[in-house]
Image (tube, rainbow, N blue to C red; front, side, top):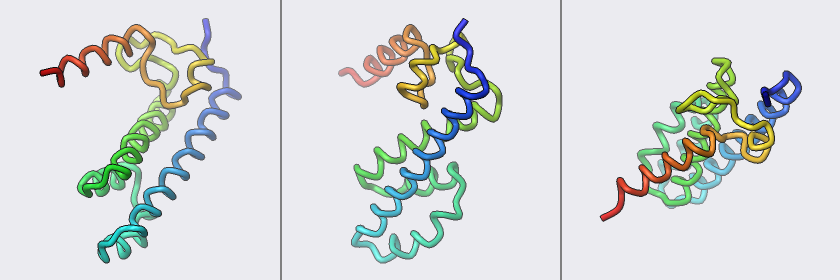
Length: 129
């Protein structure tokens, strides 16, 4: 069994929160570089938004660089929520335990290799013409 111990969970939570701070800073920078005056005004309020509110707000803005940050923000938020619910480290599809080493490699990992492969194949087929 490769279950996370308290120290490992605390380290991963710290990493996720650190990454969340970096993503929020990146989003602020994107808004500050924008040509839209309303985006400059919005920066004052972005820090007050919860992750869910920030995701909703930024999803409405057309910007490829912002899109990548929003996707990462979604993954970080999902991982932090799964920690709060006591489900972190379990595959979101089959609930098998994820390898601790794979979580340290990518703390936002949500699926075991088998389920990730199925997910990617399904996603690929959905967009295939």
